[in-house]
Amino acid sequence: MSDRADLERRAKTDGEAAMILAEARLFGDFGPPDRAGAYAAVKQSAALGFEDGRRAWVYLTAAGIGHEPDPVAARRMLAELAKEDRFAALQLAFLDHLTCEKRLAEVKSTIISVDPYIALYPGLFSAAECRYLMILGTPWLEKALILSLEGESKFDDSRDAFSAHIPPVAEDLVVQAINRTIATATGTKASWGEPLNILRYVPGQQYKPHHDGMGSDNVSPRNLTALIWLNDQFEGGETDFPKLNVRVRGSVGDMLVFRNVLATGEFDERMIHAGLPVTEGVKWMASRWIRGQDFLGGA
Image 1 (cartoon, helix red, strand yellow):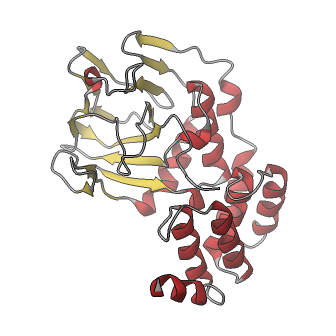
Image 2 (image 1 turned 90 degrees about the horizontal axis):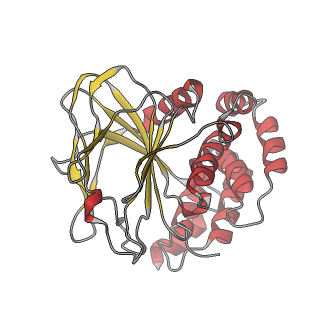
């Protein structure tokens, strides 16, 4: 409790502390998740001039985390921020070139397997959108974690790629559009998705056979997995479903979607899959695990 009180005290005058407080409230570090409290802390961080706080205020305003969504106001806020923030200016310029939401009407999915469900959405995302995600994720890349049987995230030889997840406070307007596209294509809600992950595999790296069904919080199953190929300048690295004798290698902008659970809600053990070793080049992917309810708790 003293740590919480100290953080709340510092957050009144320290923009970075206010951002730390925002994430703590958002993910329930001090009790039940508090979206409204997180938004208030982000707004305070922005008022104190902290760069990440100013950006996060735009993002949460657009997404409607802690208040009603207001994308019009968020776009206006981003334009104002872009006058002095180069990354905000890049976002603003890129927003006018997004095509993924429009492409939904043009892309016809290919059903690879009806039961269990596996489908490929060819060319859903443009090469520019894929490149944007690669650039965005690069500074945050670190050795990927896996979920242990005890429900804890840890390093393990079964997964040796590098990954970066984009949390809600860093989920910019471009990423939000990509997440909305994933949600619409899968018949889900954007709020059901876990943070988008950016993945990079160099030669020899892989993700050995595993199941995506449960996240580290052990609260609700990951009903669906969405994988996006961000590049194709590599050899090997196919997504392999050994129990189904199915192996998929997509092209830039293709999205693979598969269901991890049965109609009963139990894990579908047929959906064990692997990212085979990359043999040449560098493989870039984005992944998003989708629940059957909001990923963020609280109100």
